Structure formats: C-alpha cells, structure tokens
Image 1: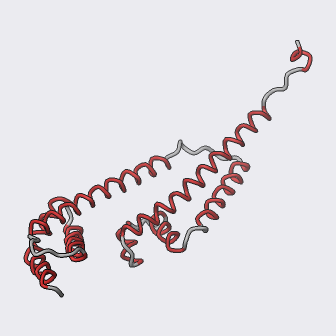
Image 2 (image 1 turned 120 degrees about the vertical axis):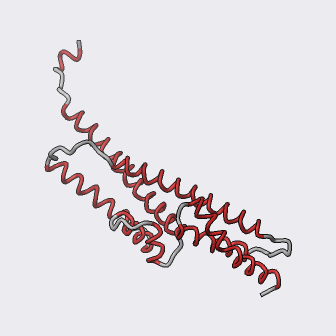
Image 3 (image 1 turned 90 degrees about the vertical axis):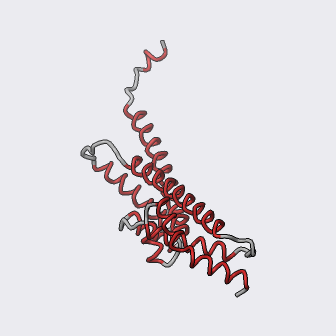
Length: 193
C-alpha cells in the first residue's frame, strides 16, 4: 500500500459515518447508503491517488454516485411501469378453441425464444418475472452486480419484445385473412356493370 493509498483509507474511515449519513439523505436508505459509500471508496481506490485528495473529493464522489443511483432507479421504475401498463388488457372474453390453440402456439414460441437466452440471463429473467424477486435480491443470490442483472433483464426483454412484435404481425395477418374470407362475394354480373 502506498502512502497516498493509506491516506485515502484513513480519510475514508474517518469520514465513513458522515458519508453514509449524507448519502442516506439523498437516497433514503441506510443499506443503499452503505453500499454507495463502499462504492465511493472502491472508485477512488482504483484511480491514481494524489496527495492533494481531500474529504471533499470523497463527499463529492459519493454524492455523484447517489445521484447516479437515483437516476438508474428512476429509469428502472419507468421501464417497469411501462411494461406493467403494456400488459394490462381489456376484460377477458370467452375464447374460442381456435383462439386458445393460437395463444398456446404463441406462448410456445415465447418459451422457445426464452430458451435461446444464455442460462444466467434466463435465470435472472425467471427470478424477476416469475418469482418476483428484486434486482438487488437476484444480484445477491447469483453473486453478480445489480448492473449485470439489469443488462441481463434488458437482453431478456429484447427477446420478449421480439416475440411480441412477431405475435402482433401474425395476428394482423390472421385478422386480414378472416376479414377477406368473411367478405360477401358480390355477384359477377353486378361487378362488371
């Protein structure tokens, strides 16, 4: 450990309590504040230390990380709200056997699409969407970062959007066929006049 590294460690240990308190005021959670304080130390530890580094740098870095955290939470909430709103449908009606068969085929295509995902990405998706676990809980369970969980979820959601787009295209084609098949045929003699 160099002289400047040990100075950073001492400064962090001296300021840790105040740092966590300040971050908690921004993010509203003690556990998140503790994580962000640790992230602050790691971030400063990984860069070349300078003898002119002060506690102000520590607090400014922590504050910036807290703001980054809030922004990412806002993006995550907007994304989840949009996904939730997109899943709300009209009240269900009794489906016909043909509709049930068609939906079963569509769901099978989604399962096939999800089976193409890398194993960890698939597990992250299922833990979140089926088991209802938070990104933080998934990260802890799998021993990965929340950022990795977010990236895996984005990858899985792209696959779901791809499936949804294909399903909509298939439904549009099916609707067009039904309309054309149910259209009354005009009398040939009247069409020519």
